[in-house]
Amino acid sequence: MDIISTSYLTEENNFVVNGKEEEEEGGKVEGQIKDENVDAAVQREQKPSWAPCFYYKIDREVYRYVGQEIIIQESVDTYGGMIWPGALALCHYLETHCEQLCLLDKAVLEIGAGTGLLSIVATLLGAWVTATDLPDVLSNLRLNLSKNTRGRCRHTPQVAALSWGYDLERTYPKSVYRYDYILAADVVYHHDFLDELLVTMKHFCQPGTTLIWANKIRFETDLTFTENFKKAFHTSLLAEDREGEIKIFMATCREGKKERDVTEELQDMLEKELREGEEEEQEKKIEEGESEGVKGEEEDRQEKSTEREEEERWSQSSGQIIDLKDEGYEEDEKDEREDADSRCSTADSDEDVTGESSSSSSV
Image (cartoon, rainbow, N blue to C red; front, top):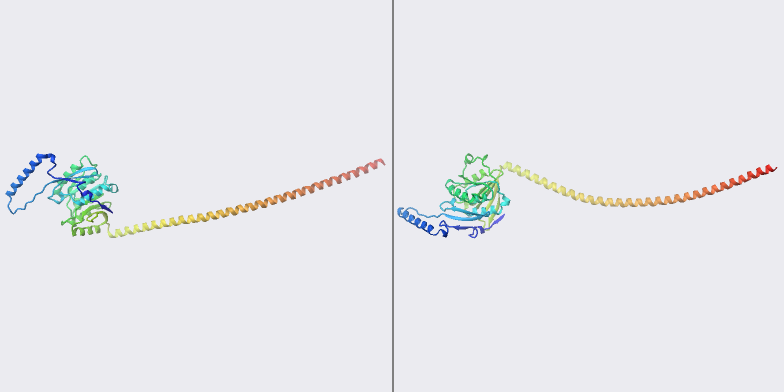
């Protein structure tokens, strides 16, 4: 959850220029003021003494968001003609979290758009925006949107009348009007249509839609609405200011209880299976690592044993070869001696035969 900085509420970032306009308009503006004062004095003289009398002036507020100067025409005679803290907080949040929210080419609906500042910022961020409010606010809303987005936006914003209530399926059927984001800022205050507001939020916040609501908590009824809002949607608190007065909620539609229970059960089962699978895989890796270590040690022992056996066989075979060689030498010498003896005996026998034959011949 983010902490909302209140620096964007100071005059350093957003400054106010009165409807009297700047000083360079000089005498023209002063003349207009004098004429207005004269007209007002004449009207006061014509009014009965019991008639209520109040004055209002149209102000021009200048803001800077998304690198653009935004000039808002507002009036104090209606709630929808003024800028409220929730709108400033949500504009600041959209600008500073544009990458996370990514409004580019998204269909966005603002309910209770008022002066249109929030819709202008969403449009400058690349969204396709439909700004809605009561019919008596639309002229000023359309003027502000047109002045501040013409030639600057990717999609031209639309303006439409929307009265909160229970019969929205007739004017805004769900099958036709589907949005990626629903935006609402300071739509909860001291009025008698909080139930209709919640019904309107539920109507437009369909599966796949994200509702972002910013509000300053002022009354006890605001807290009651917030509790009902949390019961109606899956909600999370995106940001709040340090005093805890301005809060920004994100919400998605809540399915039927039975479907939700089944969905949550399936999700829990999938998460459990995923955890078990990861644990099994980890255990398997550990076992494989241990078995590989044991296997490696066993292989080392077997290799060493095999080497020793080969050495022993080699030494034994070498000894046998040497013995065989010695025996072969002895047999060869014996054979040679026998051959020599046999040759000698043969020679002697030959001499005996020769001598006998010669003696017989001499006789």
